[in-house]
Length: 224
Ligand SMILES: [Zn+2]
Image (cartoon, rainbow, N blue to C red; front, top):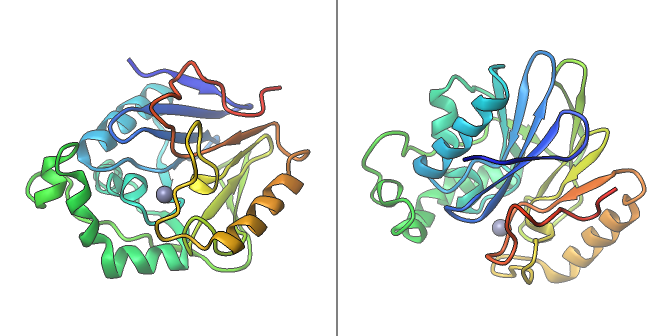
């Protein structure tokens, strides 16, 4: 069922439909990194099952920001043995302080997550924190840079850079207009200028959220 797109050596993207999401996967020789975990145990399980078709390595997880579709699936990965959950400090604080308030958004897609009753419905607050300085995460043979460009789509958007690929969270959306709810539009424009300035450094730019029009047949921009 799952269809991974290759986006650079050992870099992959999976589109899952629960809450339309592009999940990243970066596979090193010792560990693999999952970028965004889905909106609850159902989507999280779908992502984890697809990841396990690709690799049996221990997993580390990144939440690009504190919107439910990016972190509500964390508990599924914790149950698989993941202990390292990365996020920007503002994202981790938001999940810790107000994460439960977002359960009301997933009543249809993830009824267990919505009511908090069932398996893998607890909030897993990121425990590996990025502040203003970039952090390098060694997966064995491939090093990933986690970095923050300031406030934008939220106040805690984390970017994930690999030798070939830049995962930008919801700072850029695929086939949809930007989502402004808790954003900082003027600073967001600055972040986008930064991202644009990086375009020669990466072959692939991967938005985290896909619109209904963007299916797995859509190629992330830019293609080589
Ligand atoms: Zn978002």
